[in-house]
Image (cartoon, rainbow over all chains, first blue to last red; front, side, top):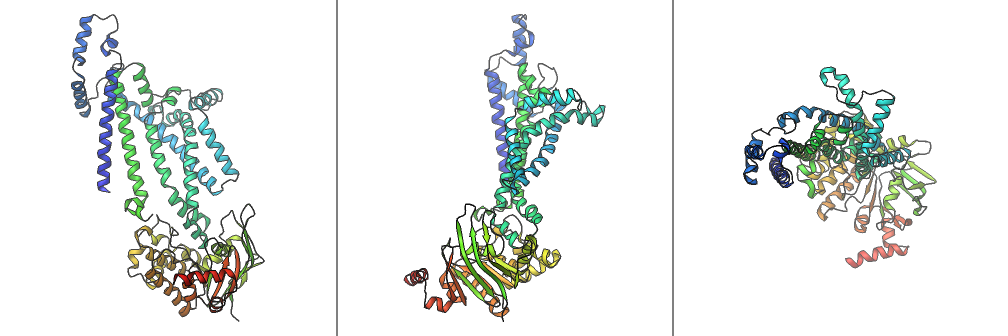
Length: 319
Length: 260
């Protein structure tokens, strides 16, 4: 287990390193002159040259990469060209919103998906299962941006149940703050529910077919014990891993939803960085998101081994 | 007058498309008997016992003229009552090949479930009784086995655990469905001797399903021969094996003779 953990950590570091190199390289080769962008086309060649020199743009790429990497590791992620503030500060300011959005939407999606998924597996081909399959199809088919716009117009605009788009900071009352995140969370959750039902339903179905379920009936155990102790113990593994993967995706930014609901989150920051050709901000944000995804995947792997003792104790030979 | 612990008359099992899998089977298990059901795989042996235990897969339909457990017709009992009756009074020992024990739950956390439910006992009582039974079926370090996951113990051990689990509720009868199939000869012999001891010393009646004629001949006093979903022959083991009437039984006997 310890050896495995160390291996996984090391491979995470390698991934981060490779991604850092790729983003740096791509941002260097794409056309566009950061000095020109920053000063505008009216700038004199002398001023441009001076800025290029001070930004280090005249050095060869590997020296620039190395210098960027050492600063990056020291926590100096540079100043955003567009905002003029430190990249790390900008990300941290927006992180809470993205984390809240991710956590809220999972908190909404998981119980709904668990209940529907488990019931539809137990009552396979009955009405609840047909309903679940319809929900799955709808969840897959409805585009998120469309749903977001419809919800916004209907629930926020027409019915006035939710505040107008925009984030209300916690300082203005935590309930109002949560309220401002509720509608976008619901939109994200609807996108997740279909997928989660599919995973939960299928792993529950395969658990119910296992021989130990025949034994629970022969031994006269209650249906509740058979389902919640025996079937669920097997069925829980795949969904837990999937949910953590989804969490990684959500933390990487829900760009569409953040944009439509005017939430200043990490996804939105990434969008601004691209729109404004803010290379430094873009590099920092991409690295941050990569780091988050690598960390969550690492956690998912470790957790997977904790909840599945067959792997932990090397039992796969017998399994 | 011996009591009938299990009796089924005119059992027919069909799948959802109406195909007949088991046709008009009648069999019984009386007190203190060691009865065998022999037949090739797919002959309906397991389905028959699953129907008796009321645990057939949902996709299959069973009909019978009569089904009695513990000398008592199940007519008038609802599903939950039958389930409780089966769980308490009949011990089921499954095949060893696949995971009839939950692979991700420690043995101590699953061996006592039926016992605690049907006998209204505490977790502590269940642990103590399970250890006693594990020793009885020949496990020398019950505590280690209790704290292990099923994949951490050998096939022979696992089958002993299955037998101990079946004995937890002090069942009045045991059904064993090919319990020795995946075991090597030495362990197979030990497990069979265990069944034999339970039957002879404690008088526990056993319905024993196997495709292995040698085992049936050695241990069972009475035998049913099944072939393609039908009961083709039955009677005392001696008689059936010395004067087989049905061509299939003869074929079955001939094939084992040739191997010898």
